[in-house]
Image (cartoon, rainbow, N blue to C red; front, side, top):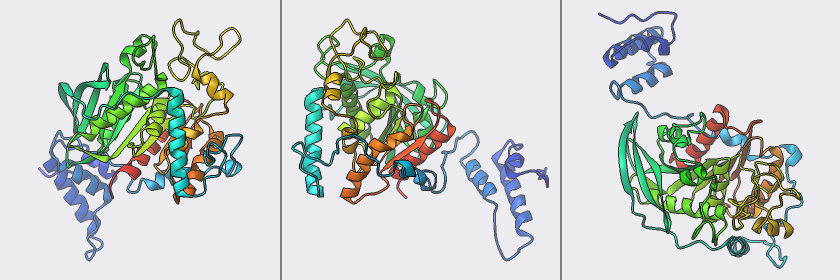
Length: 419
Protein backbone atom coordinates (compact mmCIF):
# COMPACT_ATOMS: atom_id res chain seq x y z
CA UNK A 1 0.00 0.00 0.00
CA UNK A 2 1.42 3.38 -0.99
CA UNK A 3 1.71 5.92 1.84
CA UNK A 4 -0.69 8.82 1.59
CA UNK A 5 0.88 12.28 1.49
CA UNK A 6 -1.66 14.94 2.49
CA UNK A 7 -1.52 18.24 0.60
CA UNK A 8 -1.94 20.46 3.65
CA UNK A 9 0.53 18.96 6.14
CA UNK A 10 4.20 19.88 6.65
CA UNK A 11 6.84 17.27 5.95
CA UNK A 12 7.56 16.73 9.64
CA UNK A 13 3.95 15.91 10.39
CA UNK A 14 3.68 13.66 7.35
CA UNK A 15 6.78 11.61 8.10
CA UNK A 16 5.88 11.15 11.74
CA UNK A 17 2.93 8.92 10.80
CA UNK A 18 5.10 6.25 9.17
CA UNK A 19 6.37 3.35 11.23
CA UNK A 20 9.20 2.23 8.98
CA UNK A 21 12.06 3.99 7.25
CA UNK A 22 11.09 2.44 3.90
CA UNK A 23 7.61 3.98 4.08
CA UNK A 24 9.13 7.33 4.98
CA UNK A 25 11.57 7.14 2.08
CA UNK A 26 8.70 6.55 -0.32
CA UNK A 27 6.95 9.57 1.19
CA UNK A 28 10.04 11.69 0.68
CA UNK A 29 10.19 10.51 -2.92
CA UNK A 30 6.57 11.50 -3.49
CA UNK A 31 7.11 14.90 -1.89
CA UNK A 32 10.15 15.43 -4.09
CA UNK A 33 8.24 14.58 -7.25
CA UNK A 34 5.42 16.92 -6.23
CA UNK A 35 7.86 19.74 -5.54
CA UNK A 36 9.90 19.35 -8.69
CA UNK A 37 7.06 18.68 -11.12
CA UNK A 38 6.47 22.40 -11.61
CA UNK A 39 10.12 23.02 -12.60
CA UNK A 40 11.28 19.93 -14.48
CA UNK A 41 14.74 21.38 -15.19
CA UNK A 42 15.50 22.07 -11.53
CA UNK A 43 15.92 19.17 -9.13
CA UNK A 44 15.06 20.78 -5.78
CA UNK A 45 14.36 18.73 -2.66
CA UNK A 46 12.79 20.48 0.35
CA UNK A 47 15.26 20.93 3.19
CA UNK A 48 12.93 19.31 5.70
CA UNK A 49 12.60 16.26 3.50
CA UNK A 50 16.37 15.98 3.20
CA UNK A 51 16.79 16.25 6.96
CA UNK A 52 14.28 13.52 7.68
CA UNK A 53 15.63 11.28 4.93
CA UNK A 54 19.09 11.57 6.50
CA UNK A 55 17.66 10.85 9.93
CA UNK A 56 15.90 7.71 8.78
CA UNK A 57 18.82 6.45 6.71
CA UNK A 58 20.55 5.43 9.93
CA UNK A 59 17.89 2.78 10.40
CA UNK A 60 14.93 2.40 12.75
CA UNK A 61 15.54 2.96 16.43
CA UNK A 62 18.84 4.80 15.97
CA UNK A 63 19.24 8.34 17.27
CA UNK A 64 20.75 10.98 15.04
CA UNK A 65 23.44 13.40 16.20
CA UNK A 66 21.89 16.76 16.93
CA UNK A 67 23.34 19.57 14.86
CA UNK A 68 23.20 23.23 15.70
CA UNK A 69 22.79 25.98 13.16
CA UNK A 70 24.74 25.76 9.91
CA UNK A 71 26.96 28.52 11.25
CA UNK A 72 27.04 28.75 15.06
CA UNK A 73 28.87 32.06 14.72
CA UNK A 74 25.61 33.69 13.70
CA UNK A 75 24.22 32.78 17.12
CA UNK A 76 27.11 34.09 19.20
CA UNK A 77 28.65 36.91 17.14
CA UNK A 78 26.59 39.72 18.73
CA UNK A 79 27.88 38.87 22.21
CA UNK A 80 31.56 39.69 21.73
CA UNK A 81 31.02 43.44 22.01
CA UNK A 82 29.93 45.31 25.14
CA UNK A 83 26.90 47.62 25.08
CA UNK A 84 27.76 51.22 24.27
CA UNK A 85 27.48 52.31 27.91
CA UNK A 86 30.24 49.88 28.94
CA UNK A 87 32.48 50.06 25.89
CA UNK A 88 36.03 50.92 26.95
CA UNK A 89 35.06 51.28 30.61
CA UNK A 90 37.77 49.86 32.90
CA UNK A 91 36.51 50.89 36.32
CA UNK A 92 38.80 50.81 39.34
CA UNK A 93 40.34 47.46 38.48
CA UNK A 94 44.12 47.48 38.27
CA UNK A 95 45.15 46.86 34.69
CA UNK A 96 46.69 43.44 34.07
CA UNK A 97 48.78 45.26 31.45
CA UNK A 98 50.96 46.68 34.20
CA UNK A 99 53.87 44.70 35.57
CA UNK A 100 54.10 44.38 39.35
CA UNK A 101 56.52 47.33 39.41
CA UNK A 102 54.09 49.48 37.40
CA UNK A 103 55.85 49.19 34.04
CA UNK A 104 53.32 49.15 31.16
CA UNK A 105 53.03 46.02 29.04
CA UNK A 106 53.48 47.11 25.41
CA UNK A 107 54.36 43.98 23.43
CA UNK A 108 53.48 40.30 23.24
CA UNK A 109 56.86 39.54 24.80
CA UNK A 110 56.04 41.88 27.67
CA UNK A 111 52.71 40.09 28.13
CA UNK A 112 54.41 36.70 28.31
CA UNK A 113 56.43 38.02 31.22
CA UNK A 114 53.39 39.63 32.85
CA UNK A 115 51.29 36.50 32.41
CA UNK A 116 53.89 34.40 34.20
CA UNK A 117 54.00 37.03 36.93
CA UNK A 118 50.21 36.95 37.48
CA UNK A 119 50.13 33.16 37.54
CA UNK A 120 52.98 32.91 40.02
CA UNK A 121 51.51 35.58 42.28
CA UNK A 122 48.13 33.85 42.46
CA UNK A 123 49.65 30.41 42.95
CA UNK A 124 51.85 31.76 45.73
CA UNK A 125 48.78 33.29 47.37
CA UNK A 126 46.46 30.30 46.94
CA UNK A 127 49.02 27.54 47.44
CA UNK A 128 50.88 25.53 44.83
CA UNK A 129 49.22 22.53 43.25
CA UNK A 130 50.53 19.01 43.79
CA UNK A 131 52.05 17.44 40.65
CA UNK A 132 49.46 16.88 37.94
CA UNK A 133 48.29 13.32 37.32
CA UNK A 134 49.24 13.23 33.66
CA UNK A 135 48.80 9.48 33.11
CA UNK A 136 45.60 8.70 35.01
CA UNK A 137 44.47 5.12 35.51
CA UNK A 138 40.80 4.88 34.59
CA UNK A 139 38.55 2.17 35.97
CA UNK A 140 35.35 1.54 34.00
CA UNK A 141 32.61 0.65 36.49
CA UNK A 142 29.76 0.20 34.01
CA UNK A 143 28.83 0.83 30.39
CA UNK A 144 25.41 1.79 29.07
CA UNK A 145 24.08 2.55 25.60
CA UNK A 146 22.02 5.77 25.45
CA UNK A 147 20.57 7.02 22.18
CA UNK A 148 23.51 7.72 19.85
CA UNK A 149 26.28 7.51 22.45
CA UNK A 150 27.93 5.24 24.98
CA UNK A 151 27.93 6.21 28.65
CA UNK A 152 30.74 4.90 30.80
CA UNK A 153 30.73 5.30 34.55
CA UNK A 154 34.40 5.68 35.46
CA UNK A 155 36.61 6.17 38.48
CA UNK A 156 40.00 7.88 38.59
CA UNK A 157 42.27 9.87 40.90
CA UNK A 158 41.56 13.59 40.65
CA UNK A 159 43.88 14.40 43.56
CA UNK A 160 46.87 12.39 44.79
CA UNK A 161 44.81 10.93 47.63
CA UNK A 162 41.21 11.00 46.36
CA UNK A 163 39.28 9.04 43.78
CA UNK A 164 36.22 10.41 42.06
CA UNK A 165 33.43 8.82 40.04
CA UNK A 166 32.25 10.50 36.85
CA UNK A 167 30.63 9.80 33.50
CA UNK A 168 32.37 9.63 30.15
CA UNK A 169 29.95 10.05 27.23
CA UNK A 170 31.23 9.05 23.78
CA UNK A 171 29.11 9.62 20.66
CA UNK A 172 29.19 7.13 17.84
CA UNK A 173 30.93 8.06 14.62
CA UNK A 174 34.30 9.28 13.48
CA UNK A 175 37.10 10.16 15.90
CA UNK A 176 38.97 12.02 17.22
CA UNK A 177 36.34 14.50 18.35
CA UNK A 178 36.24 17.72 20.37
CA UNK A 179 35.48 17.25 24.05
CA UNK A 180 34.17 19.17 27.05
CA UNK A 181 34.54 18.66 30.80
CA UNK A 182 31.44 19.57 32.82
CA UNK A 183 31.72 20.38 36.53
CA UNK A 184 29.03 20.68 39.19
CA UNK A 185 27.97 19.60 42.68
CA UNK A 186 27.64 16.04 41.38
CA UNK A 187 28.11 14.43 37.96
CA UNK A 188 24.57 13.18 37.36
CA UNK A 189 22.92 16.53 36.58
CA UNK A 190 25.10 17.22 33.55
CA UNK A 191 24.31 13.84 31.98
CA UNK A 192 20.57 14.52 32.10
CA UNK A 193 19.63 12.98 35.45
CA UNK A 194 19.05 16.21 37.36
CA UNK A 195 17.64 19.70 37.07
CA UNK A 196 16.36 20.77 33.67
CA UNK A 197 18.56 22.96 31.45
CA UNK A 198 21.74 21.96 33.31
CA UNK A 199 22.32 18.80 31.28
CA UNK A 200 25.35 20.24 29.49
CA UNK A 201 27.20 16.95 29.00
CA UNK A 202 24.16 15.17 27.59
CA UNK A 203 23.31 17.97 25.16
CA UNK A 204 26.89 18.43 24.00
CA UNK A 205 27.31 14.70 23.44
CA UNK A 206 24.20 14.70 21.27
CA UNK A 207 25.96 17.42 19.27
CA UNK A 208 29.00 15.24 18.68
CA UNK A 209 31.27 16.10 21.62
CA UNK A 210 32.90 13.59 23.92
CA UNK A 211 32.11 14.77 27.44
CA UNK A 212 33.33 14.01 30.94
CA UNK A 213 31.00 14.94 33.79
CA UNK A 214 32.51 15.27 37.26
CA UNK A 215 31.27 16.64 40.57
CA UNK A 216 31.97 16.81 44.29
CA UNK A 217 29.30 14.32 45.36
CA UNK A 218 30.69 13.40 48.77
CA UNK A 219 31.73 16.95 49.70
CA UNK A 220 28.34 18.28 48.63
CA UNK A 221 26.59 15.73 50.85
CA UNK A 222 28.84 16.82 53.73
CA UNK A 223 28.24 20.53 52.89
CA UNK A 224 31.98 21.11 52.49
CA UNK A 225 31.55 21.31 48.67
CA UNK A 226 35.15 21.57 47.47
CA UNK A 227 38.46 19.69 47.69
CA UNK A 228 40.99 19.99 50.50
CA UNK A 229 44.60 18.96 50.21
CA UNK A 230 46.05 17.11 51.98
CA UNK A 231 42.88 17.07 54.13
CA UNK A 232 40.09 19.35 55.27
CA UNK A 233 41.76 20.36 58.53
CA UNK A 234 45.20 21.05 57.04
CA UNK A 235 44.51 22.48 53.59
CA UNK A 236 47.62 23.87 51.90
CA UNK A 237 45.80 25.04 48.76
CA UNK A 238 42.69 27.20 48.64
CA UNK A 239 39.78 24.82 47.94
CA UNK A 240 38.67 26.64 44.78
CA UNK A 241 42.16 26.35 43.35
CA UNK A 242 42.14 22.65 44.26
CA UNK A 243 38.96 22.26 42.23
CA UNK A 244 40.88 23.76 39.33
CA UNK A 245 43.62 21.20 39.91
CA UNK A 246 41.08 18.36 39.81
CA UNK A 247 39.70 19.69 36.52
CA UNK A 248 43.24 19.83 35.11
CA UNK A 249 43.56 16.14 35.91
CA UNK A 250 40.18 15.53 34.27
CA UNK A 251 41.61 17.17 31.14
CA UNK A 252 44.29 14.48 31.12
CA UNK A 253 41.61 11.78 31.43
CA UNK A 254 39.98 13.07 28.24
CA UNK A 255 43.27 13.75 26.48
CA UNK A 256 44.33 10.12 26.70
CA UNK A 257 41.05 8.86 25.19
CA UNK A 258 41.57 7.77 21.57
CA UNK A 259 38.19 9.31 20.69
CA UNK A 260 39.35 12.81 21.74
CA UNK A 261 41.42 15.49 20.02
CA UNK A 262 43.41 16.84 22.96
CA UNK A 263 43.83 20.24 21.31
CA UNK A 264 40.05 20.74 21.31
CA UNK A 265 38.96 20.28 24.92
CA UNK A 266 36.82 22.88 26.69
CA UNK A 267 35.16 23.18 30.09
CA UNK A 268 31.79 24.42 31.33
CA UNK A 269 30.03 24.79 34.65
CA UNK A 270 27.11 26.65 36.20
CA UNK A 271 27.06 28.64 39.48
CA UNK A 272 29.39 26.69 41.81
CA UNK A 273 30.45 24.88 38.66
CA UNK A 274 30.93 28.22 36.94
CA UNK A 275 33.45 29.30 39.58
CA UNK A 276 35.12 25.92 39.23
CA UNK A 277 35.29 26.10 35.43
CA UNK A 278 36.62 29.66 35.60
CA UNK A 279 39.48 28.83 37.94
CA UNK A 280 40.30 25.62 36.06
CA UNK A 281 40.50 27.25 32.64
CA UNK A 282 42.38 30.33 33.85
CA UNK A 283 44.96 28.40 35.86
CA UNK A 284 45.42 25.51 33.39
CA UNK A 285 46.12 26.69 29.87
CA UNK A 286 45.54 23.39 28.07
CA UNK A 287 41.80 24.09 28.09
CA UNK A 288 41.16 25.47 24.61
CA UNK A 289 38.11 27.50 25.64
CA UNK A 290 35.59 27.79 28.45
CA UNK A 291 32.05 28.76 29.39
CA UNK A 292 31.34 30.13 32.85
CA UNK A 293 27.63 30.19 33.65
CA UNK A 294 26.74 32.91 36.16
CA UNK A 295 29.48 32.30 38.72
CA UNK A 296 29.97 35.91 39.72
CA UNK A 297 33.12 36.58 37.71
CA UNK A 298 34.58 39.16 40.13
CA UNK A 299 34.37 39.80 43.85
CA UNK A 300 31.02 41.14 45.00
CA UNK A 301 28.98 41.35 48.20
CA UNK A 302 26.12 39.33 46.74
CA UNK A 303 25.23 36.17 48.70
CA UNK A 304 25.90 33.91 45.71
CA UNK A 305 29.19 35.58 44.76
CA UNK A 306 30.59 34.26 48.00
CA UNK A 307 34.28 33.79 47.38
CA UNK A 308 34.87 34.51 51.08
CA UNK A 309 33.43 31.13 52.11
CA UNK A 310 35.92 28.55 53.43
CA UNK A 311 35.25 26.20 50.48
CA UNK A 312 36.33 28.87 47.97
CA UNK A 313 39.04 31.43 48.79
CA UNK A 314 38.41 31.96 52.49
CA UNK A 315 39.66 28.68 53.89
CA UNK A 316 40.28 28.54 57.61
CA UNK A 317 40.46 25.63 60.05
CA UNK A 318 37.19 24.36 61.47
CA UNK A 319 34.86 25.28 63.08
CA UNK A 320 33.82 27.30 60.05
CA UNK A 321 32.00 30.60 59.95
CA UNK A 322 28.25 30.44 59.42
CA UNK A 323 27.41 30.47 55.74
CA UNK A 324 26.25 33.86 54.46
CA UNK A 325 27.29 37.43 53.78
CA UNK A 326 30.06 39.04 55.79
CA UNK A 327 28.92 40.89 58.91
CA UNK A 328 30.55 42.03 62.15
CA UNK A 329 28.93 39.08 63.88
CA UNK A 330 29.91 36.67 61.10
CA UNK A 331 33.25 37.87 59.70
CA UNK A 332 35.22 36.26 56.91
CA UNK A 333 38.64 34.74 57.38
CA UNK A 334 41.58 33.61 55.32
CA UNK A 335 42.99 34.62 51.95
CA UNK A 336 39.92 36.43 50.63
CA UNK A 337 40.42 39.24 53.15
CA UNK A 338 44.00 39.74 51.97
CA UNK A 339 43.06 39.72 48.28
CA UNK A 340 40.47 42.44 48.81
CA UNK A 341 42.79 44.49 51.02
CA UNK A 342 45.50 44.38 48.33
CA UNK A 343 43.08 45.50 45.62
CA UNK A 344 43.24 42.24 43.73
CA UNK A 345 40.32 40.84 41.79
CA UNK A 346 39.50 37.98 39.49
CA UNK A 347 39.93 40.00 36.29
CA UNK A 348 43.63 39.20 36.70
CA UNK A 349 42.80 35.52 36.29
CA UNK A 350 40.50 36.21 33.32
CA UNK A 351 43.48 37.77 31.54
CA UNK A 352 45.32 34.45 31.76
CA UNK A 353 42.82 33.09 29.22
CA UNK A 354 44.10 35.33 26.42
CA UNK A 355 44.05 34.53 23.57
CA UNK A 356 41.90 31.50 24.40
CA UNK A 357 38.19 32.34 24.01
CA UNK A 358 35.66 32.27 26.82
CA UNK A 359 31.96 32.99 27.26
CA UNK A 360 30.31 34.33 30.39
CA UNK A 361 26.76 32.98 30.31
CA UNK A 362 25.51 35.68 32.63
CA UNK A 363 22.42 35.51 34.81
CA UNK A 364 21.39 37.32 37.98
CA UNK A 365 24.98 37.35 39.32
CA UNK A 366 26.68 38.49 36.11
CA UNK A 367 24.68 41.29 34.57
CA UNK A 368 25.92 43.56 31.72
CA UNK A 369 28.00 45.73 34.10
CA UNK A 370 30.48 42.83 34.21
CA UNK A 371 31.75 44.10 30.87
CA UNK A 372 33.82 46.57 32.91
CA UNK A 373 36.21 43.90 34.26
CA UNK A 374 35.93 41.93 31.01
CA UNK A 375 37.22 44.94 29.07
CA UNK A 376 40.62 44.33 30.66
CA UNK A 377 40.90 40.93 28.99
CA UNK A 378 39.67 42.42 25.72
CA UNK A 379 42.59 44.86 26.01
CA UNK A 380 45.04 41.99 26.52
CA UNK A 381 43.69 40.22 23.44
CA UNK A 382 43.92 43.42 21.43
CA UNK A 383 47.58 43.75 22.39
CA UNK A 384 48.14 40.17 21.18
CA UNK A 385 46.35 40.87 17.90
CA UNK A 386 43.11 39.02 18.65
CA UNK A 387 39.46 40.02 18.64
CA UNK A 388 36.25 38.13 19.41
CA UNK A 389 37.76 36.20 22.30
CA UNK A 390 35.64 37.52 25.19
CA UNK A 391 31.86 37.11 25.11
CA UNK A 392 28.97 37.57 27.49
CA UNK A 393 25.30 36.72 27.15
CA UNK A 394 22.75 37.87 29.70
CA UNK A 395 19.48 36.66 31.18
CA UNK A 396 17.54 37.92 34.21
CA UNK A 397 17.54 34.65 36.15
CA UNK A 398 20.38 32.69 37.71
CA UNK A 399 19.23 29.42 36.15
CA UNK A 400 20.18 28.63 32.56
CA UNK A 401 17.39 28.51 30.01
CA UNK A 402 16.92 27.21 26.47
CA UNK A 403 18.16 30.43 24.87
CA UNK A 404 21.28 30.76 27.01
CA UNK A 405 22.07 27.09 26.50
CA UNK A 406 21.69 27.39 22.73
CA UNK A 407 24.25 30.20 22.86
CA UNK A 408 26.52 28.08 25.05
CA UNK A 409 26.39 25.11 22.68
CA UNK A 410 26.94 27.36 19.65
CA UNK A 411 30.05 28.77 21.35
CA UNK A 412 31.58 25.32 21.71
CA UNK A 413 30.54 24.33 18.20
CA UNK A 414 32.22 27.41 16.76
CA UNK A 415 35.49 27.22 18.68
CA UNK A 416 36.00 23.46 19.02
CA UNK A 417 34.51 21.85 15.93
CA UNK A 418 36.60 21.72 12.75
CA UNK A 419 34.99 23.26 9.68
